[in-house]
Image (spheres, rainbow, N blue to C red):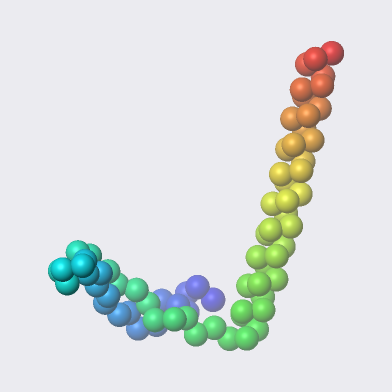
Length: 73
């Protein structure tokens, strides 16, 4: 899915200040064109990643609590 984004057109953009002077230029791709199937898969994978992150954080909290209780005695 990401490799396909490399084929998209690039547009140049500028940032101007209050005096209408260009202060920054940069290039960025146009909005990605993603197939419905790829978009659905991406959302599902991100949900799985978020759930994994929650489980991992809970695991480490529990491990730290156990370590703290063991060291106290």
